[in-house]
Length: 191
Image 1 (tube, one colour):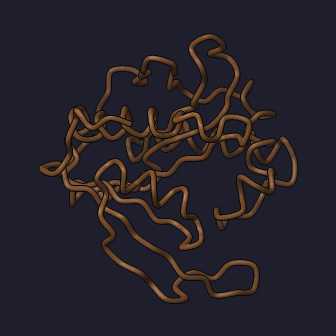
Image 2 (cartoon, rainbow, N blue to C red; image 1 turned 120 degrees about the horizontal axis):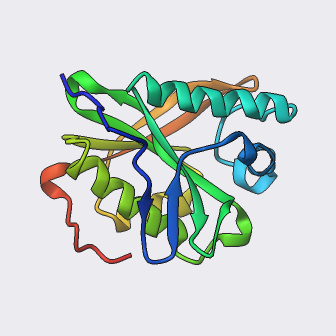
């Protein structure tokens, strides 16, 4: 079985970004992100009701990392590393099968600047090279064309379309699953 054993939290860097650990100081920015109508349009999760709930979510992210079952990063610009603009991570892992599900979100002020694409490239590379994953998947709302296009651009392939497999706020919703095998990953892929 795969094990996520890092000597310390793996801070990652790209040309423009720093991907770092969550801290309670990020609670306000995370609350703003997770209550923003445009950000949450295709993320079928309940919005936090207050900062306290957001702080609890940050504790859960740390617990997942400390339990060695998940790893998630704050997305920040190098010029302002203390300001959270998004998050990305492997929130669900299937360690027995060397597979993890990636998820991401970004504040709309930073959309269309290739920031998620840059972060995704780095985190996928980390997943295959350091975590030794065999495959990475992403589940999206079928209406989220922007997310679909980013995944396709990075070599993910559509694996499944599930009809009404997810119940949220009184409705059954569809899901699309995208996947990428380690052997098909092209580290030189430009974003």
